[in-house]
Image: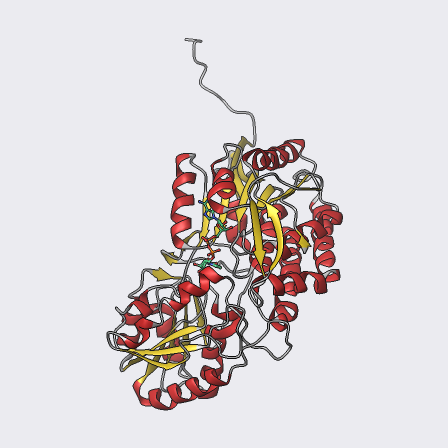
Length: 490
Ligand code: NAD
């Protein structure tokens, strides 16, 4: 059994005393770890520790050069423990080891390097239009951040939250998803030795409805960054609203991937497969609605189905595996609940739609594709969050944009065309926070990443994070002695 702490507070690992939570390996369905839920007192203690660290001011008042050094130490510590972190992430989430070790652990380390670089280049506003006054805008860390992260990509998303919150001088309390806390907890433990003052980074492990709720309602929390489902986001934002606390909400997606007739066929095909089948299809930014123009539809769909059927589904530890098991039994049931829909109301199942045959244990689900007539179909409107694509055929560009935008989500959009005019029109007309043109998933950390409509509020990224994690304070002073009205002097 792997041991996981209920909390890490002031650098110390603590075993809680709440109800036991079991951690399951989705590839074997075996319990691989367990820990007691964080009770209220432990959540409070974590917040108190973060608050005390902030008030002591050691971290926020440190020179930028020193803070950069420690952030880079965090990155180096993650790199040095990359194998261990990857093993845990793979065992706990079912994401193929090749994707975790090949990309995600490095990305987690780079999140710290990115924000270390960023704070070295920050600039400030200064106003001199009124020649008698100098006005400048200070940036100050907001205080204590509550960071709530999901299970679908725990280390990349959790490390992004921690790196961005602390880089600007804040303290934080991180609560990973209770289903997948192992690698992220290890990552937090590992970076405790990088030189962060005690209490700057605390962790609590526990259920969302109890520990998470306690954390986001705590009066000593100054801001909340949440990544997870839209309904949870609604609940957290409501709680935050009661306390007038600012939030970043990174929520669900149902993104359109528009493939025009003049696309580079092979690139669009590769990109569409990557867009829906990597990370076991459990990605907020998945291109889960594939819209293909009629002239190439038959050829494209045939090729897409053929390739999807050839995807290697297997143990996440096997180097050749391309799609591993879904993350939990509950999530497997959720994804399965869409299968009957794939042969109903104008939908046609083209591939998958069942448990992967070779496994009698584990939450293995075959890469699945359904051709769907209407965008109103549930397969095109609800977030399935698995290796499950809907495909629709369109005739004109206007029709494609209308389908893409008729969604309560608006996280990302993809467009494939070799005609620059088409690409320029599409990026303007797609209503989503990020548009990828002729590429799958290019996450530029300097740029904002956030969703429109029910996909979120606010954004992560370089300047967006700076705006969220720092107060602006305007300071004005005269450049020469003032002649002030002398009240009370007649
Ligand atoms: P979830 O909403 O169930 O849980 C996310 C986190 O919130 C967990 O840590 C959970 O414990 C916590 N939580 C649950 N209820 C809470 C409450 N009342 N108060 C405080 N915390 C609470 O989401 P999930 O199922 O873990 O993640 C999948 C979802 O996340 C998908 O919808 C996906 O699209 C979304 N997601 C979005 C992005 C993005 O950047 N937009 C990235 C990844 C995942």
